[in-house]
Image (cartoon, rainbow, N blue to C red; front, top):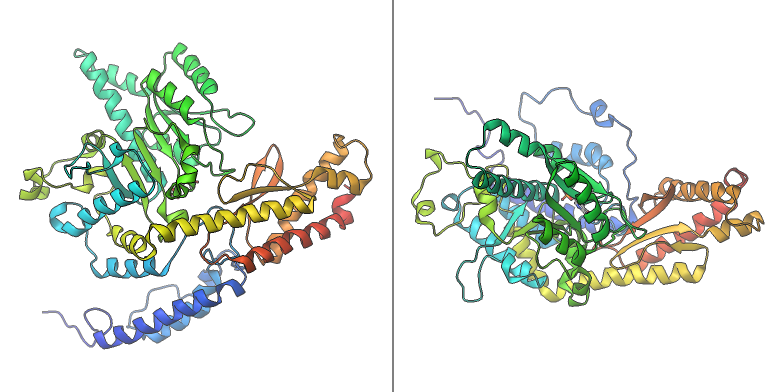
Length: 521
Ligand SMILES: *Cc1c(COP(=O)(O)O)cnc(C)c1O
C-alpha cells in the first residue's frame, strides 16, 4: 500500500472543486465582459516566464488559491486576447460560452475514444454533428455519412485537430490510392520500382496555398509544386495545366491538387471549375481547403462562390476559426472514406472487439494520424444547438456586414485603398498611392520616389497601429508592399469596436502623413 497522506485523489475535494469551479466560471465571465477594454496584444518580453516561475515543480502540494493568484499575476500578462472584439489579426479563432462549456464536459468524460466501443457517444455524436454541419453548408450528399434514407454511404466527416492534419490525411489517402493503382497495373513490380514511383509523385497547390500544403508533402515525402497565381492571387486552370504538362514531360507523376476557398493572405478563391476539370482529366485527388471562408457557406448567398467544388474528393474547413466553436475542431469530409481507412488502418489484437467485427460501427482511429482522440464533437454540438442555424448565419452576416461597412468608410475617406475584393470578412488595406503623391506634391505617381515613400508609409502605418495596441491587426506582403490584413469575425466585435478600428486607421494615417522621417524618404 502506498501512503496517500492528505492529498485528495482528484487533486481537490468535490467541495473545493464546486467552489473553485464556480469562481473560475465567474472569472471567465468577467474576463469576457471586460475584454474590449484591454489592449489586445500581450506586451511581455521573451523568456518573461522563465524569470517568474520556480525552476522545478513543487514537491509539496500547494493551495489552488495560490495557483490561481499566480495565474493572474504571472500567466495572464502573457495572454494575447484573441477573443477581444479589437483583435483582427490572422483569422478569427472563435470562442463562445457553449463551446467553453462543451470543453468542460469533454474534460469530464476524458478518455481516449479511438474505437466506437470505448466511448460510443464520442464517435456517434461526431458522425451526426458533422452531417448536420455538412447540411448547413449545403455540401454535396456524397460528403455525408448518412444517405437520405438513413443508410450509411461511402463518405462522411471526421473531426481533425487542424486543417494541417486534415490535408496530411487527405494526401496520404491520395497517395495510397495512386500506389494501389500502380501495384494493380504492375503486378511484377520490384521494391525499387515502388520507391521510384513514390519519389515521382507531385502534389499541386498555388504560391498562395497555406503552408500546411507544403508541410503535408514533407510529411508524406512527395514533391510539392506551388503554381504561380494570377493577378487576383488565384490558382487557374491554365497555370495548373501548364505546370502538370511540364512535370509530366520530366517523368513526374501528378496525384493531388489543393484548391483554396479563401486563401490565408488575401481570402482569394481559386478557379474551382477549372481545377475540377484538370483534376478529372489528370486523375488527381481533389482537396478543398476552406479553413476560414467555408464557414460562410452556412449562408446560401455565398455558395455560388465555391461552385466547382462538387467533384472534390475531400473538403475541409475549421469551425474553430469563424464558426463559433472553440479550438480545436477542423471538419474533414471525404467522398470515399475507404481511401483513408485503407491507408491508415493497422490491426492489433488489442483493438479487436465485437462492435468493430460487426462492421456496424466506425472506428475513427482509422481516419486520422494519432490513435487517441478527444470528445471534440461535444462542443460543436452545443454550439450548433444553442446558436441554431439562424444564430450561425447571423454571426457570419453580421461580421461580413462590418467588413462591408469598413470598406465603404475607407473608400469614402479616399486616403485608403481596399486592394482585394471583400467577399467575406477580410479586408486588405493600403494607403492610397495618390494620397502619398499629393502629400509629396509629386506629379508622377509612378516615380520611384513616390513608390519608395509609399512602401515606407504603409509599413509605418502598421508599425504605429501595432505600437498603439488599441486594435490588433496583421499584415500580408502584396508585391513588396506591407498591406494591412483586417480579419473581422470575433463574436465580441461590434459597432463600437468597428468605430475604434476606423478611428485607429485614420488617426494613425494622419500621423504617418505628418511624419517627416517617413515622408522625406
Ligand atoms: C488557417 C488556415 C489553415 C491552417 O489551419 P490550422 O487548422 O491551424 O492547421 C489552412 N488553410 C488555410 C486557407 C487557412 O487560412
